[in-house]
Image (cartoon, rainbow, N blue to C red; front, side, top):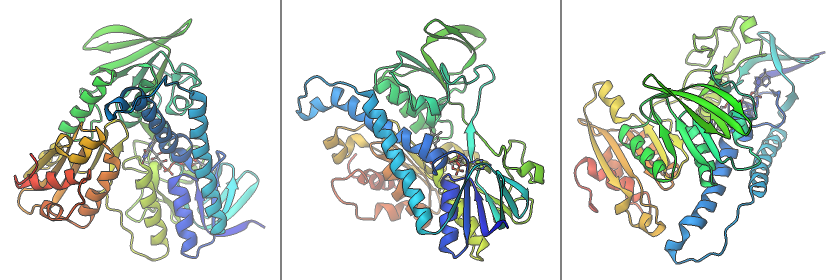
Length: 461
Ligand code: FAD
Protein backbone atom coordinates (compact mmCIF):
# COMPACT_ATOMS: atom_id res chain seq x y z
CA UNK A 1 0.00 0.00 0.00
CA UNK A 2 1.43 3.38 -1.01
CA UNK A 3 1.41 6.20 1.56
CA UNK A 4 -1.11 8.94 0.74
CA UNK A 5 -0.62 12.67 1.33
CA UNK A 6 -2.58 15.85 0.72
CA UNK A 7 0.57 17.32 -0.78
CA UNK A 8 3.82 15.88 -2.09
CA UNK A 9 6.53 18.49 -2.60
CA UNK A 10 9.34 17.59 -4.99
CA UNK A 11 12.55 19.41 -3.99
CA UNK A 12 13.67 20.55 -0.54
CA UNK A 13 15.07 24.02 -1.34
CA UNK A 14 13.62 27.36 -0.14
CA UNK A 15 10.54 26.83 -2.32
CA UNK A 16 10.04 23.22 -1.31
CA UNK A 17 10.68 23.37 2.42
CA UNK A 18 8.73 26.61 2.86
CA UNK A 19 5.79 25.21 0.89
CA UNK A 20 5.89 22.00 2.94
CA UNK A 21 5.87 23.87 6.26
CA UNK A 22 3.05 26.24 5.24
CA UNK A 23 0.98 23.30 3.97
CA UNK A 24 1.44 21.49 7.28
CA UNK A 25 0.42 24.66 9.15
CA UNK A 26 -2.76 24.66 7.06
CA UNK A 27 -3.53 21.12 8.18
CA UNK A 28 -2.37 19.14 5.15
CA UNK A 29 -0.50 15.87 5.39
CA UNK A 30 2.77 16.52 3.59
CA UNK A 31 5.75 14.64 2.19
CA UNK A 32 8.81 16.38 0.76
CA UNK A 33 11.14 14.53 -1.60
CA UNK A 34 14.78 15.65 -1.77
CA UNK A 35 17.45 13.88 -3.77
CA UNK A 36 20.63 15.59 -2.60
CA UNK A 37 21.33 14.93 1.06
CA UNK A 38 20.50 17.77 3.46
CA UNK A 39 17.39 19.87 3.02
CA UNK A 40 17.79 23.51 2.01
CA UNK A 41 18.49 23.19 -1.72
CA UNK A 42 20.90 25.43 -3.57
CA UNK A 43 20.36 28.30 -1.14
CA UNK A 44 21.49 26.63 2.05
CA UNK A 45 23.95 24.10 0.69
CA UNK A 46 25.76 25.77 -2.22
CA UNK A 47 24.24 29.23 -2.64
CA UNK A 48 23.08 32.11 -0.45
CA UNK A 49 24.37 30.83 2.88
CA UNK A 50 27.87 29.49 2.17
CA UNK A 51 28.57 32.50 -0.08
CA UNK A 52 27.51 34.95 2.62
CA UNK A 53 29.49 33.06 5.27
CA UNK A 54 32.63 33.42 3.12
CA UNK A 55 31.81 37.03 2.25
CA UNK A 56 31.52 37.92 5.93
CA UNK A 57 34.69 36.02 6.90
CA UNK A 58 36.74 37.42 4.03
CA UNK A 59 35.47 40.92 4.81
CA UNK A 60 36.74 40.60 8.39
CA UNK A 61 40.12 39.43 7.10
CA UNK A 62 40.37 42.25 4.59
CA UNK A 63 39.17 44.82 7.11
CA UNK A 64 41.57 43.78 9.85
CA UNK A 65 44.43 43.91 7.35
CA UNK A 66 43.53 47.15 5.63
CA UNK A 67 40.77 49.09 7.31
CA UNK A 68 40.98 48.84 11.07
CA UNK A 69 43.97 51.18 11.44
CA UNK A 70 41.74 54.17 10.76
CA UNK A 71 39.92 53.45 14.05
CA UNK A 72 43.19 53.68 15.95
CA UNK A 73 43.32 49.93 16.45
CA UNK A 74 46.72 48.41 15.90
CA UNK A 75 47.01 44.71 15.18
CA UNK A 76 50.04 42.51 14.73
CA UNK A 77 50.58 40.00 11.97
CA UNK A 78 47.29 38.98 10.44
CA UNK A 79 47.13 35.48 9.02
CA UNK A 80 44.62 33.50 7.02
CA UNK A 81 43.44 30.06 8.08
CA UNK A 82 41.40 29.10 5.03
CA UNK A 83 40.63 25.68 6.49
CA UNK A 84 39.05 27.27 9.56
CA UNK A 85 37.13 29.71 7.38
CA UNK A 86 35.73 26.86 5.30
CA UNK A 87 34.95 24.82 8.41
CA UNK A 88 32.99 27.75 9.86
CA UNK A 89 31.03 28.01 6.61
CA UNK A 90 30.23 24.27 6.73
CA UNK A 91 29.15 24.58 10.37
CA UNK A 92 26.73 27.38 9.52
CA UNK A 93 25.31 25.38 6.61
CA UNK A 94 25.04 22.26 8.79
CA UNK A 95 23.26 24.14 11.57
CA UNK A 96 20.71 25.66 9.21
CA UNK A 97 20.00 22.51 7.21
CA UNK A 98 19.52 20.46 10.36
CA UNK A 99 17.25 23.28 11.58
CA UNK A 100 14.96 22.57 8.62
CA UNK A 101 15.01 18.86 9.42
CA UNK A 102 13.90 19.86 12.94
CA UNK A 103 11.07 21.99 11.54
CA UNK A 104 9.93 19.05 9.40
CA UNK A 105 9.78 16.93 12.56
CA UNK A 106 7.86 19.63 14.43
CA UNK A 107 5.28 19.82 11.63
CA UNK A 108 5.13 16.03 11.05
CA UNK A 109 6.31 16.41 7.46
CA UNK A 110 7.58 13.17 5.96
CA UNK A 111 10.94 13.48 4.27
CA UNK A 112 11.48 11.10 1.39
CA UNK A 113 15.07 10.71 0.19
CA UNK A 114 15.75 10.17 -3.50
CA UNK A 115 14.69 11.53 -6.87
CA UNK A 116 10.97 12.23 -6.97
CA UNK A 117 9.41 11.28 -10.30
CA UNK A 118 5.87 12.15 -11.29
CA UNK A 119 4.44 8.96 -12.71
CA UNK A 120 0.84 10.22 -12.74
CA UNK A 121 -0.68 13.57 -11.69
CA UNK A 122 -1.41 12.05 -8.27
CA UNK A 123 1.61 9.77 -7.90
CA UNK A 124 5.27 10.46 -7.16
CA UNK A 125 7.73 7.58 -7.33
CA UNK A 126 10.83 7.69 -5.15
CA UNK A 127 12.87 4.64 -6.06
CA UNK A 128 10.67 1.63 -5.38
CA UNK A 129 8.33 3.65 -3.20
CA UNK A 130 5.25 5.45 -4.57
CA UNK A 131 3.58 8.33 -2.71
CA UNK A 132 -0.05 9.10 -3.53
CA UNK A 133 -0.75 12.82 -3.65
CA UNK A 134 -3.92 14.89 -3.84
CA UNK A 135 -1.63 17.63 -5.15
CA UNK A 136 2.02 17.85 -6.18
CA UNK A 137 4.22 20.95 -5.86
CA UNK A 138 7.28 20.91 -8.14
CA UNK A 139 10.19 22.86 -6.62
CA UNK A 140 13.10 21.34 -8.50
CA UNK A 141 15.05 24.60 -8.75
CA UNK A 142 17.91 25.43 -11.06
CA UNK A 143 21.50 24.56 -11.95
CA UNK A 144 24.53 26.59 -13.14
CA UNK A 145 24.37 27.40 -16.86
CA UNK A 146 27.41 25.94 -18.62
CA UNK A 147 29.30 27.82 -21.34
CA UNK A 148 29.86 25.54 -24.34
CA UNK A 149 33.26 27.19 -24.90
CA UNK A 150 34.28 26.58 -21.27
CA UNK A 151 32.65 23.37 -20.03
CA UNK A 152 32.79 22.80 -16.26
CA UNK A 153 35.42 20.27 -15.21
CA UNK A 154 35.18 20.83 -11.46
CA UNK A 155 38.95 21.37 -11.19
CA UNK A 156 39.99 24.33 -13.34
CA UNK A 157 36.73 25.49 -14.87
CA UNK A 158 34.44 25.86 -11.91
CA UNK A 159 30.81 26.51 -11.14
CA UNK A 160 29.88 28.47 -8.02
CA UNK A 161 29.63 25.18 -6.11
CA UNK A 162 33.36 24.45 -6.45
CA UNK A 163 34.33 28.12 -6.13
CA UNK A 164 32.77 28.05 -2.64
CA UNK A 165 35.06 25.25 -1.53
CA UNK A 166 38.57 25.87 -2.88
CA UNK A 167 41.30 24.33 -0.73
CA UNK A 168 43.71 27.19 -1.36
CA UNK A 169 43.57 30.78 -2.54
CA UNK A 170 44.17 30.84 -6.31
CA UNK A 171 46.85 33.24 -7.44
CA UNK A 172 44.86 34.24 -10.56
CA UNK A 173 41.12 33.81 -10.85
CA UNK A 174 39.15 34.66 -13.96
CA UNK A 175 35.42 35.12 -13.37
CA UNK A 176 33.23 34.88 -16.44
CA UNK A 177 30.04 36.86 -15.80
CA UNK A 178 29.54 40.08 -13.84
CA UNK A 179 26.28 39.15 -12.13
CA UNK A 180 25.70 38.75 -8.39
CA UNK A 181 27.33 35.32 -8.06
CA UNK A 182 30.45 36.26 -10.07
CA UNK A 183 30.96 39.55 -8.22
CA UNK A 184 30.36 38.03 -4.79
CA UNK A 185 32.72 35.09 -5.23
CA UNK A 186 35.21 37.29 -7.09
CA UNK A 187 35.15 39.59 -4.04
CA UNK A 188 35.73 36.71 -1.63
CA UNK A 189 38.85 35.48 -3.42
CA UNK A 190 40.12 39.00 -4.13
CA UNK A 191 39.93 39.84 -0.42
CA UNK A 192 41.81 36.66 0.37
CA UNK A 193 44.61 37.63 -2.02
CA UNK A 194 43.77 36.39 -5.54
CA UNK A 195 44.26 38.53 -8.64
CA UNK A 196 40.73 38.64 -10.04
CA UNK A 197 39.73 39.46 -13.60
CA UNK A 198 36.05 39.60 -14.49
CA UNK A 199 35.19 38.96 -18.13
CA UNK A 200 31.77 40.31 -19.12
CA UNK A 201 30.08 40.11 -22.48
CA UNK A 202 27.88 43.19 -21.84
CA UNK A 203 29.09 46.81 -21.48
CA UNK A 204 27.75 46.98 -17.88
CA UNK A 205 27.90 44.87 -14.73
CA UNK A 206 24.68 43.76 -12.93
CA UNK A 207 22.63 44.82 -15.98
CA UNK A 208 19.31 44.78 -14.13
CA UNK A 209 20.49 47.38 -11.61
CA UNK A 210 19.92 51.12 -11.86
CA UNK A 211 22.67 52.46 -14.14
CA UNK A 212 24.20 55.04 -11.80
CA UNK A 213 24.32 52.58 -8.91
CA UNK A 214 25.74 49.74 -11.06
CA UNK A 215 28.47 51.97 -12.46
CA UNK A 216 29.38 53.14 -8.94
CA UNK A 217 29.69 49.51 -7.80
CA UNK A 218 32.05 48.78 -10.69
CA UNK A 219 34.26 51.73 -9.68
CA UNK A 220 34.27 50.54 -6.06
CA UNK A 221 35.31 47.02 -7.06
CA UNK A 222 38.00 48.37 -9.37
CA UNK A 223 39.43 50.31 -6.42
CA UNK A 224 39.65 46.97 -4.60
CA UNK A 225 41.80 45.65 -7.43
CA UNK A 226 39.26 43.66 -9.44
CA UNK A 227 39.98 44.07 -13.15
CA UNK A 228 37.01 44.20 -15.51
CA UNK A 229 37.17 43.17 -19.16
CA UNK A 230 33.90 44.51 -20.52
CA UNK A 231 32.29 43.64 -23.85
CA UNK A 232 34.56 40.63 -23.87
CA UNK A 233 33.58 37.04 -24.64
CA UNK A 234 35.33 33.96 -23.28
CA UNK A 235 35.82 31.76 -26.32
CA UNK A 236 37.79 28.81 -24.99
CA UNK A 237 40.26 27.43 -22.48
CA UNK A 238 43.25 25.18 -22.68
CA UNK A 239 44.77 23.45 -19.66
CA UNK A 240 48.38 24.32 -18.90
CA UNK A 241 50.80 22.70 -16.44
CA UNK A 242 49.64 24.95 -13.60
CA UNK A 243 46.27 26.24 -14.69
CA UNK A 244 44.40 27.49 -17.69
CA UNK A 245 44.99 29.61 -20.74
CA UNK A 246 41.70 31.30 -21.58
CA UNK A 247 41.01 32.83 -24.94
CA UNK A 248 38.82 35.90 -24.94
CA UNK A 249 37.59 38.14 -27.71
CA UNK A 250 36.85 41.86 -27.51
CA UNK A 251 35.64 43.81 -30.52
CA UNK A 252 36.92 41.15 -32.91
CA UNK A 253 40.41 40.95 -31.35
CA UNK A 254 41.44 37.70 -29.65
CA UNK A 255 43.63 37.60 -26.55
CA UNK A 256 44.72 35.08 -23.94
CA UNK A 257 44.41 35.30 -20.16
CA UNK A 258 46.37 33.05 -17.83
CA UNK A 259 44.59 31.79 -14.73
CA UNK A 260 44.86 29.13 -12.04
CA UNK A 261 41.11 28.61 -12.19
CA UNK A 262 38.12 30.13 -13.93
CA UNK A 263 34.69 30.55 -12.39
CA UNK A 264 31.92 30.45 -14.97
CA UNK A 265 29.05 32.45 -13.47
CA UNK A 266 26.91 33.33 -16.46
CA UNK A 267 23.63 32.55 -14.73
CA UNK A 268 21.50 29.60 -13.77
CA UNK A 269 18.98 27.63 -15.76
CA UNK A 270 15.81 25.94 -14.57
CA UNK A 271 16.17 22.29 -13.65
CA UNK A 272 13.47 19.64 -13.84
CA UNK A 273 15.55 16.65 -14.94
CA UNK A 274 14.37 13.34 -13.55
CA UNK A 275 11.14 14.82 -12.17
CA UNK A 276 8.99 13.18 -14.85
CA UNK A 277 7.28 16.51 -15.51
CA UNK A 278 7.96 16.56 -19.27
CA UNK A 279 6.97 12.93 -19.72
CA UNK A 280 3.69 13.63 -17.93
CA UNK A 281 2.89 16.51 -20.30
CA UNK A 282 3.66 19.45 -18.00
CA UNK A 283 4.17 22.47 -20.32
CA UNK A 284 7.52 24.28 -20.41
CA UNK A 285 8.39 27.59 -22.09
CA UNK A 286 11.20 28.12 -24.62
CA UNK A 287 13.66 28.83 -21.78
CA UNK A 288 12.99 25.47 -20.12
CA UNK A 289 10.86 26.93 -17.32
CA UNK A 290 7.66 25.23 -16.21
CA UNK A 291 4.71 27.41 -17.24
CA UNK A 292 2.17 28.18 -14.54
CA UNK A 293 -0.96 30.30 -14.22
CA UNK A 294 -1.46 32.93 -11.54
CA UNK A 295 -2.33 30.18 -9.02
CA UNK A 296 0.94 28.39 -9.83
CA UNK A 297 -0.95 25.54 -11.51
CA UNK A 298 0.89 23.82 -14.37
CA UNK A 299 -0.83 22.51 -17.48
CA UNK A 300 -1.50 19.23 -15.62
CA UNK A 301 -4.37 19.51 -13.11
CA UNK A 302 -3.26 18.99 -9.53
CA UNK A 303 0.41 19.69 -10.34
CA UNK A 304 1.84 23.05 -9.26
CA UNK A 305 5.30 24.61 -9.66
CA UNK A 306 7.17 27.48 -7.93
CA UNK A 307 10.68 28.85 -7.41
CA UNK A 308 13.66 28.85 -9.77
CA UNK A 309 12.01 26.27 -12.04
CA UNK A 310 9.37 28.83 -13.14
CA UNK A 311 9.81 32.32 -14.60
CA UNK A 312 11.00 35.31 -12.57
CA UNK A 313 14.11 36.32 -10.67
CA UNK A 314 16.05 33.32 -9.34
CA UNK A 315 16.02 34.37 -5.70
CA UNK A 316 15.35 32.41 -2.54
CA UNK A 317 12.84 34.90 -1.12
CA UNK A 318 10.89 34.98 -4.41
CA UNK A 319 10.77 31.17 -4.33
CA UNK A 320 9.49 31.22 -0.74
CA UNK A 321 6.77 33.81 -1.43
CA UNK A 322 5.53 31.77 -4.38
CA UNK A 323 5.50 28.54 -2.38
CA UNK A 324 3.43 30.13 0.38
CA UNK A 325 1.00 31.66 -2.11
CA UNK A 326 0.62 28.41 -4.06
CA UNK A 327 -0.07 26.34 -0.95
CA UNK A 328 -2.46 28.91 0.53
CA UNK A 329 -4.30 28.85 -2.81
CA UNK A 330 -4.66 25.06 -2.53
CA UNK A 331 -6.27 25.63 0.86
CA UNK A 332 -8.78 28.11 -0.60
CA UNK A 333 -7.00 31.33 0.41
CA UNK A 334 -6.28 34.22 -1.98
CA UNK A 335 -3.13 33.84 -4.06
CA UNK A 336 -0.90 36.85 -4.51
CA UNK A 337 2.79 37.57 -4.98
CA UNK A 338 3.77 41.19 -5.52
CA UNK A 339 6.46 40.88 -8.17
CA UNK A 340 6.91 44.68 -8.19
CA UNK A 341 8.43 44.54 -4.72
CA UNK A 342 11.09 41.83 -4.71
CA UNK A 343 14.38 43.12 -3.33
CA UNK A 344 17.57 42.12 -5.10
CA UNK A 345 20.95 42.28 -3.38
CA UNK A 346 24.58 41.88 -4.43
CA UNK A 347 26.58 41.24 -1.26
CA UNK A 348 29.80 42.94 -2.33
CA UNK A 349 31.45 45.73 -0.32
CA UNK A 350 29.74 48.11 -0.60
CA UNK A 351 26.55 46.13 -1.03
CA UNK A 352 24.13 46.89 -3.84
CA UNK A 353 20.46 46.48 -3.01
CA UNK A 354 17.47 47.51 -5.03
CA UNK A 355 13.73 47.14 -5.13
CA UNK A 356 11.29 48.21 -7.81
CA UNK A 357 12.09 49.94 -11.08
CA UNK A 358 15.41 51.43 -12.14
CA UNK A 359 15.41 54.88 -13.71
CA UNK A 360 16.15 53.23 -17.08
CA UNK A 361 13.14 50.89 -16.69
CA UNK A 362 10.90 53.87 -15.81
CA UNK A 363 12.08 55.62 -18.98
CA UNK A 364 11.36 52.53 -21.07
CA UNK A 365 7.85 52.39 -19.63
CA UNK A 366 7.35 56.08 -20.40
CA UNK A 367 6.91 56.95 -16.71
CA UNK A 368 7.72 60.53 -15.68
CA UNK A 369 9.71 60.39 -12.43
CA UNK A 370 11.48 62.55 -9.89
CA UNK A 371 14.55 61.23 -8.14
CA UNK A 372 16.41 61.99 -4.93
CA UNK A 373 19.95 60.84 -4.17
CA UNK A 374 21.88 61.02 -0.93
CA UNK A 375 25.54 60.01 -0.52
CA UNK A 376 26.72 58.00 2.50
CA UNK A 377 29.58 60.49 2.68
CA UNK A 378 27.04 62.88 4.26
CA UNK A 379 25.59 60.28 6.65
CA UNK A 380 26.97 60.56 10.18
CA UNK A 381 26.78 56.86 11.03
CA UNK A 382 28.53 55.88 7.79
CA UNK A 383 31.32 58.28 8.78
CA UNK A 384 31.61 56.65 12.21
CA UNK A 385 31.77 53.26 10.53
CA UNK A 386 34.29 54.57 7.98
CA UNK A 387 32.02 53.16 5.25
CA UNK A 388 31.07 56.20 3.21
CA UNK A 389 31.19 54.77 -0.30
CA UNK A 390 27.89 54.78 -2.20
CA UNK A 391 24.54 56.48 -2.07
CA UNK A 392 20.78 55.96 -1.86
CA UNK A 393 18.55 56.80 -4.80
CA UNK A 394 14.77 57.08 -4.51
CA UNK A 395 12.65 57.15 -7.66
CA UNK A 396 9.10 58.44 -7.35
CA UNK A 397 6.27 58.97 -9.82
CA UNK A 398 6.39 62.63 -10.91
CA UNK A 399 2.65 63.11 -10.44
CA UNK A 400 1.53 60.86 -7.59
CA UNK A 401 4.90 60.79 -5.72
CA UNK A 402 4.43 57.03 -5.21
CA UNK A 403 7.82 55.34 -4.78
CA UNK A 404 8.62 53.25 -7.86
CA UNK A 405 12.12 52.14 -6.97
CA UNK A 406 14.88 52.43 -4.38
CA UNK A 407 18.50 51.67 -5.17
CA UNK A 408 21.22 51.58 -2.57
CA UNK A 409 24.96 51.15 -2.84
CA UNK A 410 26.50 51.28 0.58
CA UNK A 411 27.14 49.67 3.95
CA UNK A 412 24.50 47.12 4.94
CA UNK A 413 22.38 47.98 1.89
CA UNK A 414 20.99 44.44 2.20
CA UNK A 415 19.40 45.42 5.52
CA UNK A 416 18.47 48.98 4.51
CA UNK A 417 16.44 47.81 1.51
CA UNK A 418 13.85 46.18 3.78
CA UNK A 419 12.48 49.58 4.82
CA UNK A 420 12.13 50.57 1.17
CA UNK A 421 10.39 47.28 0.33
CA UNK A 422 7.97 47.74 3.22
CA UNK A 423 7.24 51.30 2.15
CA UNK A 424 6.58 50.21 -1.43
CA UNK A 425 4.41 47.28 -0.30
CA UNK A 426 2.20 49.82 1.47
CA UNK A 427 2.17 52.10 -1.59
CA UNK A 428 4.19 54.82 0.15
CA UNK A 429 5.06 58.16 -1.43
CA UNK A 430 8.53 59.62 -1.09
CA UNK A 431 6.91 62.16 1.25
CA UNK A 432 5.79 59.28 3.53
CA UNK A 433 9.40 58.09 3.89
CA UNK A 434 10.68 61.65 4.26
CA UNK A 435 8.21 62.36 7.10
CA UNK A 436 8.95 59.15 9.01
CA UNK A 437 11.10 59.82 12.05
CA UNK A 438 14.37 57.89 11.72
CA UNK A 439 16.72 57.27 14.64
CA UNK A 440 19.94 59.27 14.63
CA UNK A 441 22.70 58.51 13.87
CA UNK A 442 21.80 55.55 11.65
CA UNK A 443 22.35 54.41 8.09
CA UNK A 444 18.60 54.47 7.30
CA UNK A 445 18.70 58.25 7.66
CA UNK A 446 20.30 58.17 4.20
CA UNK A 447 17.05 56.73 2.83
CA UNK A 448 15.03 59.47 4.52
CA UNK A 449 17.39 62.10 3.09
CA UNK A 450 17.16 60.61 -0.41
CA UNK A 451 13.36 60.67 -0.09
CA UNK A 452 13.58 64.33 1.00
CA UNK A 453 15.77 64.84 -2.06
CA UNK A 454 12.89 63.90 -4.38
CA UNK A 455 11.34 67.24 -3.41
CA UNK A 456 14.80 68.90 -3.34
CA UNK A 457 14.61 69.18 0.47
CA UNK A 458 17.57 67.07 1.63
CA UNK A 459 18.89 68.65 4.80
CA UNK A 460 22.44 67.41 5.06
CA UNK A 461 23.76 68.13 1.58
P1 FAD B 1 16.74 25.06 -5.21
O1 FAD B 1 17.25 25.77 -4.03
O2 FAD B 1 17.64 24.83 -6.35
O3 FAD B 1 16.19 23.66 -4.67
C1 FAD B 1 15.77 22.65 -5.50
C2 FAD B 1 15.96 21.34 -4.78
O4 FAD B 1 15.26 20.33 -5.48
C3 FAD B 1 17.41 20.89 -4.72
O5 FAD B 1 17.74 20.57 -3.39
C4 FAD B 1 17.46 19.63 -5.60
O6 FAD B 1 18.37 18.67 -5.13
C5 FAD B 1 16.03 19.14 -5.48
N1 FAD B 1 15.53 18.35 -6.60
C6 FAD B 1 15.55 18.67 -7.91
N2 FAD B 1 14.92 17.72 -8.64
C7 FAD B 1 14.49 16.80 -7.75
C8 FAD B 1 13.75 15.61 -7.87
N3 FAD B 1 13.28 15.17 -9.05
N4 FAD B 1 13.50 14.88 -6.75
C9 FAD B 1 13.94 15.32 -5.54
N5 FAD B 1 14.63 16.44 -5.37
C10 FAD B 1 14.89 17.19 -6.46
N6 FAD B 1 19.29 33.89 -3.74
C11 FAD B 1 18.98 34.86 -2.88
O7 FAD B 1 17.81 35.20 -2.73
N7 FAD B 1 19.94 35.51 -2.14
C12 FAD B 1 21.25 35.18 -2.26
O8 FAD B 1 22.11 35.75 -1.60
C13 FAD B 1 21.61 34.16 -3.17
N8 FAD B 1 22.90 33.80 -3.30
C14 FAD B 1 23.21 32.77 -4.15
C15 FAD B 1 24.54 32.42 -4.27
C16 FAD B 1 24.91 31.39 -5.10
C17 FAD B 1 26.36 30.99 -5.21
C18 FAD B 1 23.91 30.68 -5.83
C19 FAD B 1 24.27 29.54 -6.73
C20 FAD B 1 22.57 31.03 -5.72
C21 FAD B 1 22.21 32.09 -4.88
N9 FAD B 1 20.89 32.50 -4.75
C22 FAD B 1 20.58 33.52 -3.90
C23 FAD B 1 19.79 31.86 -5.51
C24 FAD B 1 19.01 30.87 -4.62
O9 FAD B 1 19.89 29.91 -4.13
C25 FAD B 1 17.89 30.24 -5.43
O10 FAD B 1 17.08 31.24 -6.00
C26 FAD B 1 17.01 29.36 -4.53
O11 FAD B 1 17.77 28.34 -3.93
C27 FAD B 1 15.87 28.76 -5.35
O12 FAD B 1 15.11 27.93 -4.54
P2 FAD B 1 14.33 26.66 -5.15
O13 FAD B 1 13.74 25.98 -3.97
O14 FAD B 1 13.45 27.09 -6.24
O15 FAD B 1 15.44 25.75 -5.81
